[in-house]
Length: 194
Ligand SMILES: [Zn+2]
Image (cartoon, rainbow, N blue to C red; front, side, top):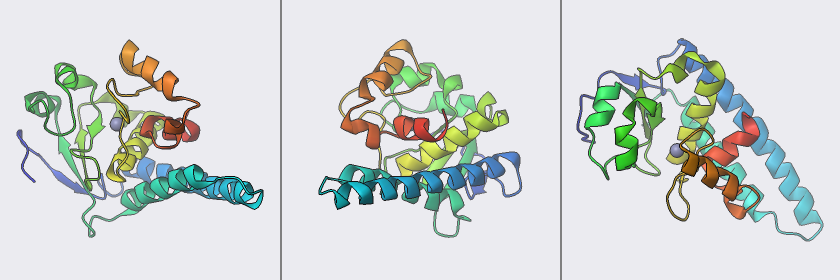
């Protein structure tokens, strides 16, 4: 993979084994696994009553795919790259699943997956999120769901972010209660880390 900017350190298993962030990654995987099991149970109950449980099963499946990445030691290709705000800002619009607006606010990007379904995560090591365990767990979980093929903007921009710009926050709340709640990373993670 080639991307503009200096990829810096390559960090297998998303982030360095033994680091605080790696611990957060394991904790996020535990919580996500519990959530997936809960969703599967709920789906089975619905199906028993002759109702459709497919969206719940889809959500659980995507969460389990994310967990697989979070638990990886890197040998199966799940990698994280540590970069800095300046590297993020130097990326081109349309590259790396980020918009022009994102690039103007590069310091606000904690991490991203370059393309939906990609097995790498790019981590902005300058972001204060990495010293906040709740935020870090929520963020690694969110990114792992992009690796599982899910999108922040299932229909149109803006992206659905709980703590983004006013338009992104509005989008987040608009998607609540719709079918997108089952397949949008920020909404899925909101059930796991409020
Ligand atoms: Zn995202």
